[in-house]
Image 1 (cartoon, rainbow, N blue to C red):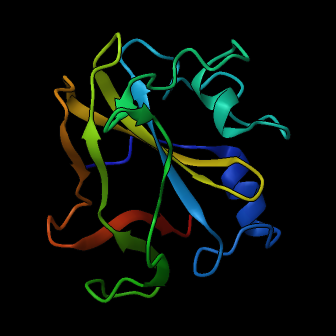
Image 2: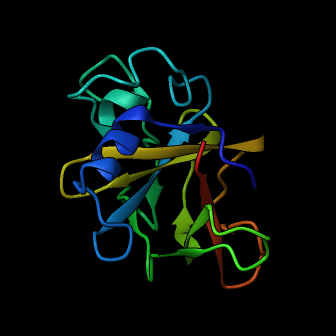
Length: 163
């Protein structure tokens, strides 16, 4: 699964050591079909938050509004985030950010299908990246697992390369 958008505010915070990809807490938020997720306008604003990345409407109407097992929907925490040099390259100018796959358990239906997932740093709500699914996913009270590129129990979420 390829990353669709990396937010400039994340890159700014990373450069000034405002985000630690090994130790900070990161969360995943489901995004509904036809939401503003993945749109590039305003993504470099210094005050952009995860909610701002989804919608211009402060009530968050573009966040998935279904339920998980009959309980109001909540974001899922990314387990075991880590950053390392890409061992598969001839140079050391590529870093890989990895983590465990995430599962939203028993996702009941919302009013629209799910088009992707937004990853963000939970301490400041800084959006990291948006990953758009190849096709929207209809919810049907089953588990929804986001598998990173390897398809195993964990994998590379994002690769960063020197310019």
